Length: 446
Image (cartoon, rainbow, N blue to C red):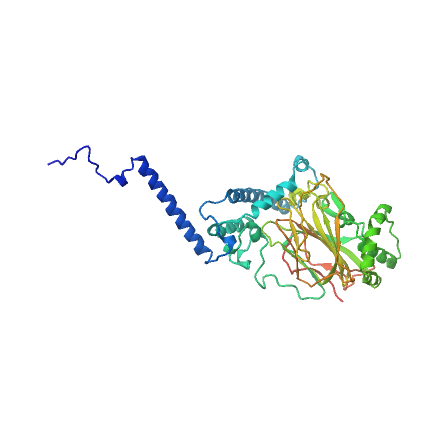
């Protein structure tokens, strides 16, 4: 017996009749509301019940800025893999790239890289939903080979990529070499160049086929000039100084000498020293805080508001005067062996350098005048001839993106090139080495 239903009687109840447009809208609204509630509950659990303002927000709708950040990370990762592969292949074959400008380097000069970097900095500072943070930071770690186990805080507590990027490390992750006759690395990174310099006017190799002068990197350095003259007198030789450089450093030197009467005494007591340098490149995945390489007194800070070119391997061999043209902060002072300077060079994407000994310093600020290079802003830390005293391993500054640190320092040297004196400073590194904060760059003997 076949049962039949009247055509005007619905088999299903009205609230389940999906053919009805109104009911379909109600059902969709219910799904959206249910998913939003579930996501918010997940966010509150991930945040550990924290009531901080930076952990709150819309956990359902991912901000457009976060999406843009993730896309940019993907592009950076792909480019990094390509560049690393090319460099590794060249090293295996024993090939050293020579300086060769290209069209891209010329094109970069017409781009508003400072404005682009500030925009990128804004994206990096956007708060990420709590439940999404571990996934974003783990993706970053896989892309750039970061060690998340060293992070001092749980991943959920880093509100933005910027906070994660300048994160501190757990206690003991970077032990400082205890040897009192060692100079340690101030950063995690890759050794690009190092060596001995022949006076304040000596040149540092940027890449094979192109160099830049120490004075152009550090600016008019009266301390370095006086120390070089002292060593020249001890060596029985004379160095011809350019009149323009003397005029530039004259005013700055009198400022330092008047504010720091102990500086001249320190210089006069210095024995024969050599001038050395070391260039260390920080990749995006490296730990990005700068530490003190020795016990020293910081006397002067210079801020060069320059360009913001990238500082990767390709840029070093295609952009002329890369470190000299880029925005940088130079710290200059004295340690037990004489002169010491740290140049923190900014790069594309944010271009921000935080100075812990001077928190009010702001880099990559909008410039009123479109001038490629302006005189550096100088600040003295030496009202009583002492300056800012830093201990070996102390935190000094932080980068907000991959960049470069250049060390220029005096250390013991031999008067005769034939004399293999045990007290002479010797580097304990090789080009291309991976180095971490606290590991020795070089040693000498008393």
